[in-house]
Amino acid sequence: MQIEAKQNETTVNFPQKLGLYTKFFKRPMDFILSLIAIIVLSPVLLITALLVRIKLGSPVIFKQKRPGLNGKIFTLCKFRTMTDERDSSGNLLPDETRLIRFGRILRSTSLDELPELFNILRGEMSVIGPRPQLIKDMVFFNEEQMKRQSVLPGLSGLAQVNGRNCILWEDKFKYDLQYIDNITLIGDWKLIFQTIIKVFKKSGIHAEGMATAEDFGDYLLRTGKTSQAQYDAGQAEAKELLKL
Image (cartoon, rainbow, N blue to C red):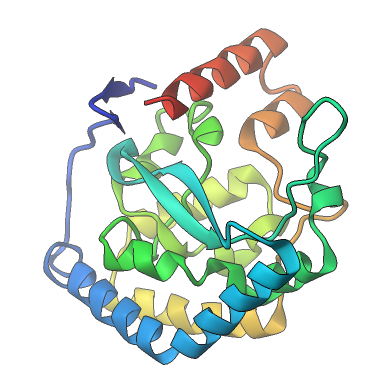
């Protein structure tokens, strides 16, 4: 994977093969839908923000750098779901310890994802597209898997309606690339309605035995698909990219 880093950006160039819908209509639709959703859901956003402040304290919004279109790094916003509990050495406690019941409720209802509507409004995300993974996931992507960065990341996507966090990484990539190869207006609206159904069913939130989704690098190491040396090199690269 060749990544070019400069001026606070990490980018990788892809040949653009955009259809009529993707080129002219998808972004305006994203803007209109996200704006309407923010207005309609503003009471939910305010109440959730207040509850997060009471239950978990400040900050209410969790911000994290993620790779977006062409690998360009942007700041993804979510409602905070975990505490800042640390051990005697000042290190954060494991996710399963910091993810309290209130945080689990936010995740199971997908309310924690609502601030991403502002990412969509700003043009950093789309309503439908491959989910924005971590930078420390991207550094382990091969050339084929990096194609998922050729479009804007989405609030939801084909992988999310087909298992979300309960499917293997290989299946996530398969669904992401399948979506990229066939982006249509009808397909996007179908995924929007399927997402709404999935949210109400609260399905695919957690992989079995895990409080949060497993990082791609950790998965590769656990399954013997990468060496410890390659894993360490990837983690070091991710830390450097986060400094940009």
